[in-house]
View 1 (tube, rainbow, N blue to C red):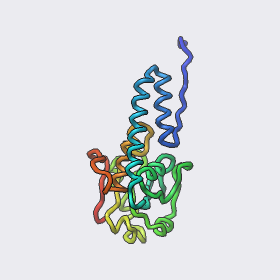
View 2: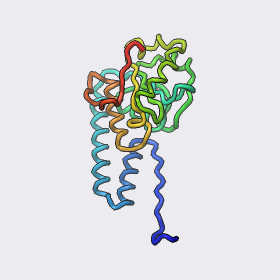
View 3: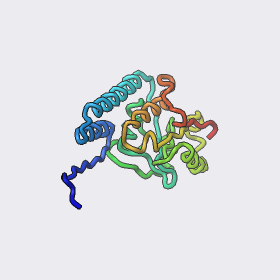
View 4: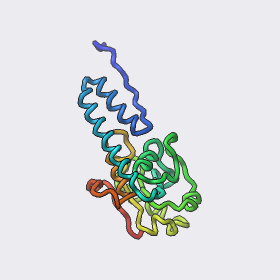
Length: 199
């Protein structure tokens, strides 16, 4: 069997939020749905800019550890550090130019993160909660400011941080509320994330 048309292959490998937005426009052009794609992309960009503008008013920039995997311990890469920056936090590990990065626990304790966001790659909140005891039994866990101040969160990574797409912007809004609850509220969808007390 032969195809009447030569298929066009789009290879999408976004690294940052801007790449995700451009990918949506690319798919729109390729599928003849450019107006709808532009509408989605423009909405995403506006929401990102709104978060960044409000976060810029913050008096502090809490240090944030984002945990993409607990054993071995790894932090998120690509758009995740960017999301922390846009949400008004200080990224503790990893950067926008690297993928997921393996961490040493001693380094985590030394840096004393103010906020910890558990975001096990591809998993929801219920599954993410299973990883908390892995870290909680490590020496120095109780000394971390995030733990002492009940600022440990578990997010639905499958929906909001792991996969490229429009819901990453919701993930950014969720992160902004975690980092700056004094500036952001009502950004966390039901079952989207959980704050842990006495972790």
